[in-house]
Length: 239
Image (cartoon, rainbow, N blue to C red):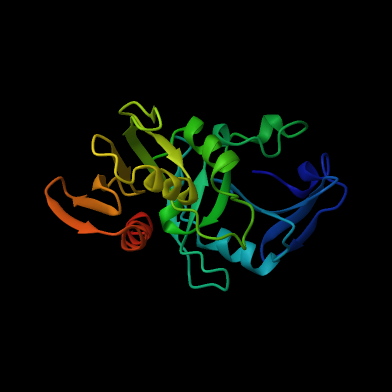
């Protein structure tokens, strides 16, 4: 259990309110705002970048279940809020570097908690995958971010000599649109798309300007690029 005195070893000022501690980490180009709810069972840290909303941060902490584990990430629902977040993701101490340094010895029960749109994380992320996602794909501490759905692609495009192995790679939606444009008319190419819930669709392009979208490995529809982009956006945000 982290105390105010513990936090003051690393931070010059610590405020109290809503049953939480509030403090800042100031960097040249940004300010991280922290909210810590500390109990006998867990320490829950909510962080935001250049955005201070103590009431919302404390409400997220207050909605966390008492059953958080240090073995894997946990996802829980949030009440309706002005940011549009539907859930929060809490990850154990080995998934993040927050409060290292003077507090290293007291991080055993420290979870980093991130308000999310449900389609952004599956909850089954490994330590490596989570760190990669928040570095490249999801600006997790920006509470005003656009929705960043989790998208994994496995593809082959011989026309542009590009592709992945069967494990696929995680990419942004904008990158996926570029891959779909490159697939136009490539008869021997394909893109397999997996969303955050593990559902899969496949895209082919038998001729220029025409795409085939395959659901559940069997149900096919022939559409143009605009309708394809619309269908795929719904799919990757589907929860």
